[in-house]
Length: 174
Ligand SMILES: CC(C)(COP(=O)(O)OP(=O)(O)OC[C@H]1O[C@@H](n2cnc3c(N)ncnc32)[C@H](O)[C@@H]1OP(=O)(O)O)[C@@H](O)C(=O)NCCC(=O)NCCS
Image 1 (cartoon, rainbow, N blue to C red):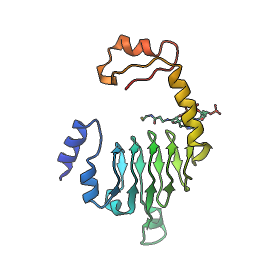
Image 2 (image 1 turned 90 degrees about the vertical axis):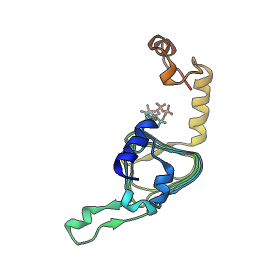
Image 3 (image 1 turned 180 degrees about the vertical axis):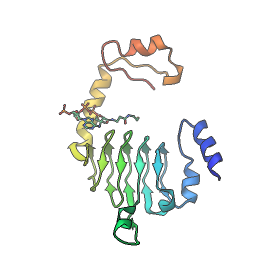
């Protein structure tokens, strides 16, 4: 698949990558994985592994570090492993050599330089764990119970419906 075809696929799928294309490049990708990453280290795709039920939003997945070119003729490379049931927020940077466990949320803008244990929510630069996944889940499910919800998706809602949902703060849509 050439660059134009990749761009066309992504534009037709809301920015989502074609997992089959990434698998052909050598990435290991489990079931029910949605990848919208702005940057994937494609030449090093065989070093990247993702489990099941994962959403990678507009983040960066990196498996190489060319800073070592300043002091040698070598580029540093390392594996990047993401477990199952993981969400990676917008603009997060996942660095080479990192392993992210299962049931993990990585917050928007996080710079993940060290391993993140299973069952955790991590934010910041460098990313630090701020809560367990279970605590985050309970808090957000309670919030969902107490907030207005719509069964429509973002592109099915009128401007008025969208605004009505957040009139008192948080709303939830499909
Ligand atoms: C990490 C995240 C899931 C936490 O959600 P939450 O549990 O509702 O978090 P809260 O807003 O209650 O914040 C909890 C604490 O973490 C901090 N925090 C939350 N997200 C943060 C982030 N991305 N970076 C740094 N700190 C963050 C808050 O400031 C708050 O700190 P405080 O307790 O000192 O006030 C969420 O903030 C996030 O980053 N989601 C990703 C959004 C995104 O990428 N959207 C676009 C693509 S879908």
